[in-house]
Image (tube, rainbow, N blue to C red; front, side, top):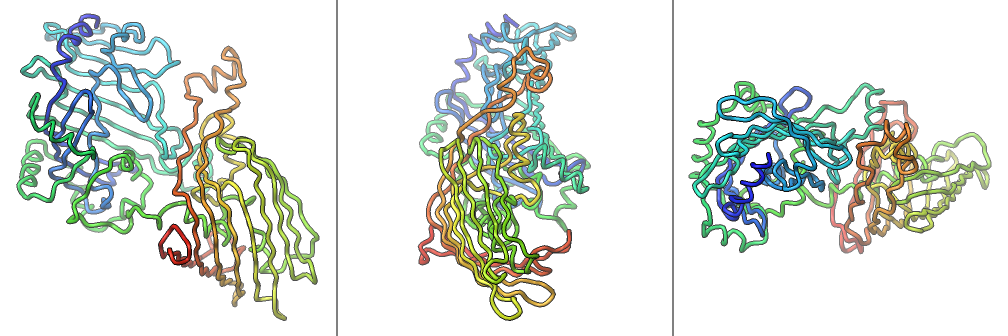
Length: 566
């Protein structure tokens, strides 16, 4: 391996700039079933100092793949195991031919056959990111011709919730080209994990009998036609986008068909491709689609107008999680019972009580320590008025949170009601009716995960409603909100308080990344909206016996930064 590293230093400058054609096929699995297939034929342009550019020539996919996932940056999934450093989701792994590889890895010769050395490798310590796997070295050239490697840790992509991170398996074949450089000719990768859930959330789903499917993405890329120092490389870097999309070309479709003939689908893939052209569930509605979206927001592609847009996958403010919270925070689908607005709970008159004081206490990477209390008084002023107060402090960003609200029941039969509420505080960006902020504290303190992303919201809400027959409730509401971003404030966890020599640290904390991901920013500004909500079965129906119909509208003339109707 010392000789492999030495010789690489000699030929590496020869691969400074090149162009190559790449054919990629990605097969997505949900448990053991094929959920989708997509392919692309691209030209890759590489400059050591400037990076990669990708020009999409042709694509194919099963009919259930949404428009936003049909055009994808294949290069974002690629890697070169011959590089000194390989980056995966923000973590840097030293490659097996890095100048310091002999100090970082243990290499062992396990065999020699047909002019090739077969070598195993593993990190000398798991304290830092590294690879475990096998290498094949050509003895006459002392060059790496094959590598199959696994990261020594699960990876946690930013913005992608997973039960226990993602597992990777990477495989690559290399060949020598005219200038003497060794470059990839075939790449294979496999990514697996349970996406869209966390350890605590998955435990709840399993108790309910609906576990999250195991997602697995298998990808293959074949390279052909390397051209070194091609003039086209300069033209490719004259544009800022990393992925360029050409208008549809039947000529390139024929090229893709030819490549598929040289590299046909397996019988199982061909059958799945045929089945998914007919009746199917849109991929955008399936949790496993997250593996097709791992690099979606970092592409910056220019999509030709002839490519249709799937409304199920349209990226717009209508689908943004923070806007869904407008309904969730005040109409019954609550993120956390501690965020419940009192007014929603007095439509059906409860037993007479004078008030209830409830503490609020939890931790996360944004609030750090959230502590305070809320008080709810019901059946006041002739048993027709309810009042709500809450307040406390977040130590992370040093802000006080507060809330106040009141609801009044009208009419002889108590069916009509009005309400007015104010709240300011940290809010999760996506709803969970079962997994509360308090539940989230336990995996956070153990450095397992912080499921939610957060933003700061100040909100006024006015509503009027009517209780209908069969205890159903119709509510019309006006919301006025201001949204702003919050940043991560702490990486504190139980593991950081333990000695590295302790039993707890060795069995619970060792070998894991104890740094939490950043809290992503939001689009800040004011939002005004009108809501109309019909709850069939009342606000406290039996489990699995609830139906909600909701409509919401917002526009710029209302003084809102968001324009949508849903």
